[in-house]
Length: 301
Image 1 (cartoon, helix red, strand yellow):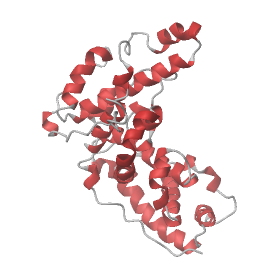
Image 2: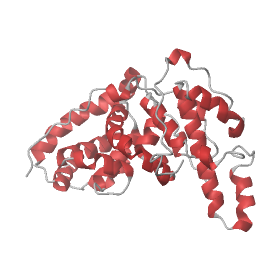
Image 3: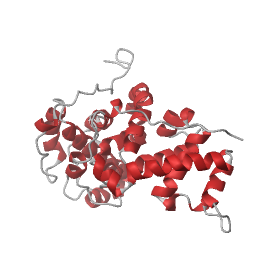
Image 4: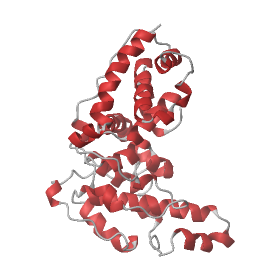
């Protein structure tokens, strides 16, 4: 069927998740993906969210392996393949199979996998396959902002980092900035910066102004054109968010925890991750149905 006959040839509708109690343990990490593919696909197509997550993570990993191999000149490709895929884990996985990574990540994200939410919302998989991503533009534009808020409330630092990137360049070309940029008014941008400073102070060292009695508040107000009393009011709310979403007590209450980031690992620098752990843990119940974040509005200068 041609593109004209099927305008979205790479789009795969997400299968509603089955009950978590029906999710079986994921198969061995050491089995080659070509052998695992039909098993994981069959389970994912029946609504097994961890299987969808694992399949997507595996396909994305092998896409990056193949990209690194293809980037090399022909004479070096066998050497690079042996270095990046010494056990032949990705051998026999076709390009058409690898293109399914976005669809299965989206399915796992909608089922509440925080790891899949981070990958889908962050645009990692979309950027890895622009042609396939084009078939998910409408769904992504609708789902990414809502999934991002659910992930932020679950204490995801990767989602917070994506918000920071969006505030730094609201007109950027990355997927997430385009999805949320129009909703990030100055007060929301200021709150993201204030939250990032509390959660990951190293992300905004330029806010520390020597000699200022309240350096962060003043600098955030200056950057986003907000009066200091408005920023102070926002900072009170942000302090509550940090305790509820990112503190040890907050994560324990929500059942979340910081873990590895399978989708973000790069074959050039890291061994193949523990996909099973990342895809079996850190789930949010019905993420699209969670209450939206209430972003306070304050007066501007």
